[in-house]
Amino acid sequence: MKERDRRALIPYFGFVAPGLLVYLFIVAYPVLYSLWLSVSNFNPNRGGAWNFVGLQQYKTMVQDPKFWHALKNNLTVVGVSIFGQIPLGFILAYILYRKLVRARYFFQSMVFFPHFLSTIVIGTLWKRLFQADGPVARLIQLVSGDPAAQFDLMLNSKTVMYPIGFALIWMYTGLYMIIFLANLQKIDTNMIEAAKIDGASESQIFFRIIVPLLAGTILVSSTLAIAGSLRGFDLIFAITTQGLVRDNAMVLPVFMYQTAFQDYSNDMRFAYGSAISNAIVFISVTLILLSNYIGKKLRSGEGN
Image 1 (cartoon, rainbow, N blue to C red):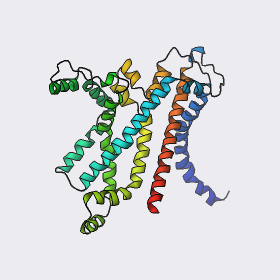
Image 2 (cartoon, helix red, strand yellow):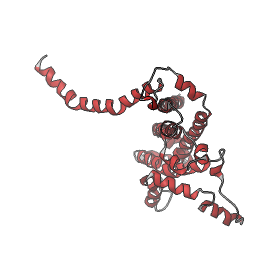
Image 3 (cartoon, helix red, strand yellow):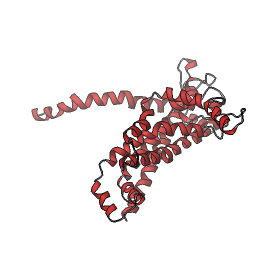
Image 4 (cartoon, helix red, strand yellow):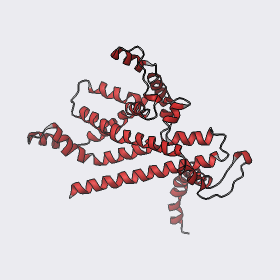
């Protein structure tokens, strides 16, 4: 090998190789190990013995009603993120960008403030507020005049995701507001001023100029929302309590955690939990690819 070629390889061995090794150890190895574990009958109670069982764990998973219940709740969280956090964050960012509110820096700080707090602290806060006899229930009693009124949405499997969705919007809307605000500030203001001179209303400026220009940012935010929603664990785990409420609000990450680390009656809990974690990754990638496909179709349709 020539001296010049050896020198050309120095950056790869000096900078790329260490980063690649760290990536393989931290990311690639756990992924491959999880895939291997999910096609086995690994049992820690048998001294770690295992045998290849193919897709048996995945078959058990799709036949488990708890999996479908957790998936339904997770899709609800995805819907709250895409159709709640992102549009609301976009609108708030536009209000700040167009200076349609006074004390906008204070307003911006207050909306983004929840993102500075610990997720566990926020979850504990909302759990206290949403208790059957908590502050929300006291407020309902004052408004309705019924001293026996309770806030029972958290106790019903059909309504438990409503208050959780509200807490998710309260916590993460500020993040998307900052993302959109940063991209709005890159837009040439002369374009907006020209539209105003031509008689465009505020709504026309928003839908015909701002939204098309930020289509890429909306797509990226949707990707972040989907990935975050399907791996979200800490906030929902902190809001819900042990027992009925947590079972009603079960999402896939919580289901995976309870299966792998708390269900000691399941001899193959680690293998089954790995299958659930792989399903989370597969569903996440599928939804992200679907959102990218829809985004490209909408943008190509606008181009035509």
